[in-house]
Length: 331
Image 1 (tube, one colour):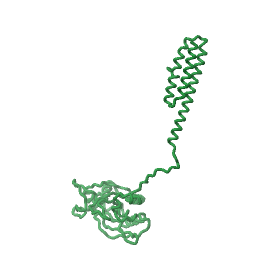
Image 2 (cartoon, rainbow, N blue to C red):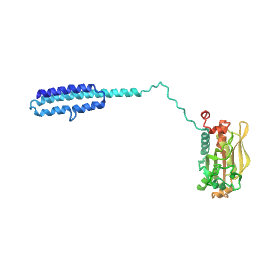
Image 3 (tube, rainbow, N blue to C red):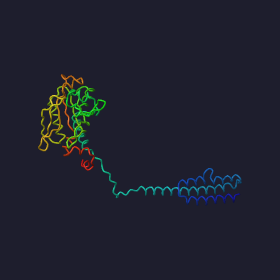
Image 4 (cartoon, helix red, strand yellow):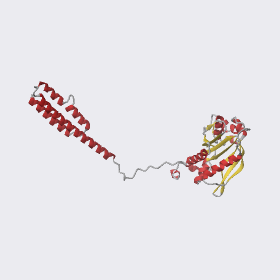
């Protein structure tokens, strides 16, 4: 019995060491450990026969079994370490970056000149204490016309000027409805700037578009005068164009302001019309529940495209809408 157990243990050791040495996979190595050293492994099966040994023989066979177990376990540990190191080296080789190799170029995005112009305008007015306000582009007749002191027979309601929808609503022709909506929900004093897209039935050419963008400002408080309006516009123009340009105000007419004016700036030796403005008409105040005997206010509005074309020396408004990368990449 003793001789047979010794032979079996020696055979198991040789077989295990040989199998472990040629294993190239960590999962397969773990399976070998279970087959040879697990609770139901081959070593355990051999040692079950020790119960038939005499008390004198058991210590010697037990010592041999421990030697076999240690030899197999050491071989397993060495092979596992070798396989893990090889795996790490392979991963490093696969993930190694050549820092001298040129990177993959992807062009950076650019802000559209209309967006950058609006951003600059809002930055100026927010810096002057104004709040940005927005409203719907599909409006009702009341907000787009009636509340702004534009009666039913006013030319601005002409079908040739306005896009009317089948349900009686319309595409707003200016951002002034935002002012009415804001005043209905806020008590004075208020100072807002309202950017947005507007629609008019214009024939598209180098200086006109059926869809364009406006920015309007509104201030309502006790004691505001035309002088406050002039000072605000002069400061805006100075910050917008980066220099103290000559500014002039020409008398004009708008249904929702009285008195009204057009604003011109002297740009490159020529007078350029840039916006309309005026004191808020008392009828507009009454339409939102403000007392015109207590409060006064001023408003102004301008087209973003006009400012973008002046600032960037663009010769045709249609360039702003063609999505031509050759044009947009200049900004």
